[in-house]
Image (cartoon, rainbow, N blue to C red):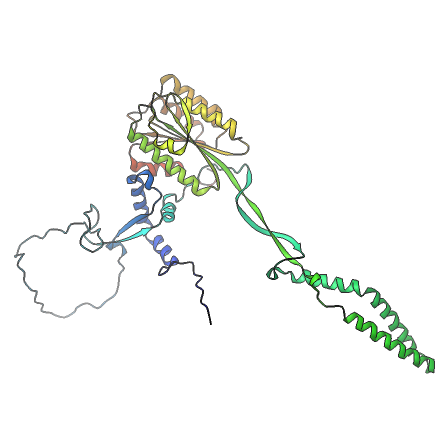
Length: 428
């Protein structure tokens, strides 16, 4: 009886190699679809896959074929619906259907059926975060986390047959045989020297008797040496492997959001989308990451992720309260010499007039020396407020550690996110 074990990594009726080649070939269309999905999706649906449609004209390939040639006479059957000169309407659907005829209307396409396929969650995130990274990452502290690596841990006396160390086992067997037969070999060497001496002497009855006795003793000693086993169980040595923790970098991200009365629901939704992108990005890139959520109006409060995104609390605006709370949390829980610290703030820019200079001073003097990077996103502002002007002065002084951008609609979240966290050129 024989058994067939399928150890292929591909799913049934699928080829991973061909799929990856296809994704690389139509990367432009997929990236555009991912960008559109970020703008139209709700927060809860951000981690799902996406259905991609590619116009048929973009996947057609040139071919060589024989033309009709010559002269032909063709008779077309008539119909009852149309007459000469009638104009035929374009079919509904815009060419983005699957060819079944009952698809929904679309505002895209060239009048041809499109080729549609699905990308899974991981592929969606790969395109979503392509070429993005946190700037100025410094691995200040390494610690063992959840990942482990198997390494050689020496030689042991017991183990699995598959881990036997042949060289060490043979060396141990040779040392054992030498130790057990050392006295016998010395005795044998002495008898062989005496036998050699007697063989060089003249013939005599005494000599012949001694030679016979020596031969018997030599044979006995050699049999004793041969009875020592060539390889015994005590000689076996095995490779030992141990799991050691793999060092990973520790990072913490502070997410600061304005929930004051001047922030309407659309503005809050833009801020939520930005922080969700940031949260997914961090979870994808770092093994050990802490995320601290801080909401503020006239006062600031550290909250859970659920409360951060969905609580309906409101009030006035004092931004410095959130920055002070961020500073206090860093001092209490995140030593600068052990953590890579990042902060991102989303607000409409509205703030109590006397508070904006205090915010700029807090960031420049107390936060930036502790942070790797600070990002500020202003969502749907009526006009730039004093907070934007003070933050712009900080960016001019510290362009590598501070960045800011403006977002007016959901479709701009993803481009702004890429602008803030694109890969820096070496030495930039």
